[in-house]
Structures are given as structure tokens and as C-alpha cells.
Length: 164
Image (cartoon, rainbow, N blue to C red):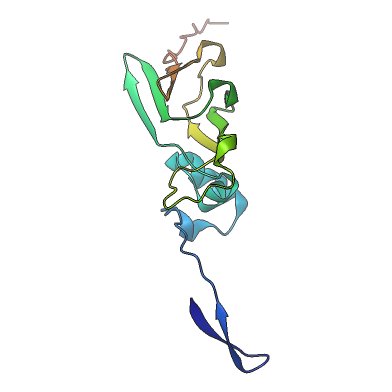
């Protein structure tokens, strides 16, 4: 409990405060324009403050290159695979879904509760030229694995110049 002074009535009142965890973002100082926010979110591949506010929780993720394929894994324990959607648009891979609370948890008196429930969304910027038809996703033992073949490097075509 925190005692605060009310300036309207000049009396002391009791006010309840709750500790909340905020996701730290290295781009927080740049949140002055939506385009910059979107660009920084795509560049850093993580969540800005705005993304964290839209989602109830953010699953942990790992990304790596493996034999010419981008492999992105997300920890989704307790999430039904039917509640997960993976999409690719404008070279941004989006994974969104929801972890639903069990019906028998309502009205229980918990002494600790650290598992987050609700909607989530993660976005990952990919290089240009990724073929959406080749993206594969599988879910096993609480882990979602998305495989995206890296685009093939384009080679310039040499054009013969003919004399007129």
C-alpha cells in the first residue's frame, strides 16, 4: 500500500499499487513516429513496447541458419497447435496464437501463478525473395519449428551488345 496526497481534497488516501514487469526494448527512445517504430521492430526482430502491449505474453524464440534454411523455433508449452497461425507477408514471418487457461482454474486460490495465458504474436523480418510456398511449420513437444529456405542469390544476366 502507498499513501498518496490528493491535491483536490488535501487529504491522505490509501492506494493499492501492483508491480508489473515491462519488456525492455532497445528501441524505446525511438517511439516518436509509427513508421520508425515499425522499421525498428522489423530491424531488431523483437518486440517494441507497442507489440508487448498488444500481446498478453511473448513466447521465447530462437533463430538460426541450417544448411541454407532459416530455422525459427518458438517455445509454446501448453498451446494447442490448432490455436497457432503462421503467415508470411512482405518478407515478415508472423506467428500468432493463444494459450487458453483451463476451465478448472477459475475461482482457485493460487499462492503463485507465473504462467501467462492469452494471445501472443511474434514477427520476424526475412530477406527479400523468400518463397512462401516453401515455408514449413511443425509443432512437437511444446516447440514450434518454422523452416524457411533462404532465397537463392540472383546472378546478373549478361546481355550482348550488338553493333548497329
